[in-house]
Length: 217
Image (cartoon, rainbow, N blue to C red; front, top):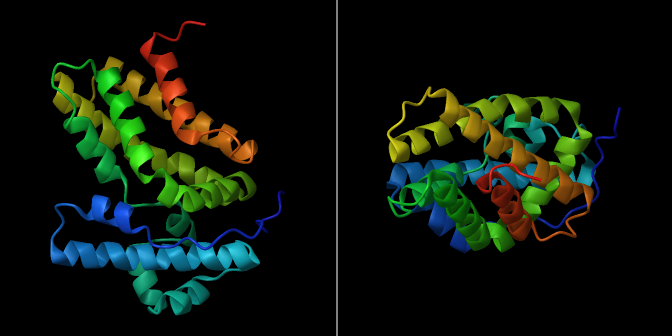
């Protein structure tokens, strides 16, 4: 089994611009909830970077985030959820819906993903990198990431259903969405395996270009 002791990583600070972007349109109560979730995640990443995944407990995370353990579990069902969830799905959803209505779905998706990632990347990169390092090292995280992908697929199916007029359970729509998530997952694994020497934004753009041209080689 791979070691769950991950190399020390820079602290994951609250990205002011990314926070404002993700909180756009939220009410006060939702902003407070989001900031509590973010504080818990930041504490978890900081502790895991210092002492390793297995050695970090929910109780330690709660203490570092200055909340109770019951508060942590109110926001995250498991320790794995703390690592694997973030606040940026609504950002991507809005970006896709804001694309011109006459754009082909894959073009709109590619532009929205690349534009959103580029605007947030410098600020969320440390969290992305540590998360993917942990997914590579910890089997429980890897398994839960694949399980959680179903929810992300449903979100994207809903967005593309709205753009195309196809039902959410349309077979071809779901095949396209599955291909997109497969491509993005492969990009993230390649990126972390190469110790982030690739430009993630450019690599995501390249991967989605392969899908847009029709999977030809």
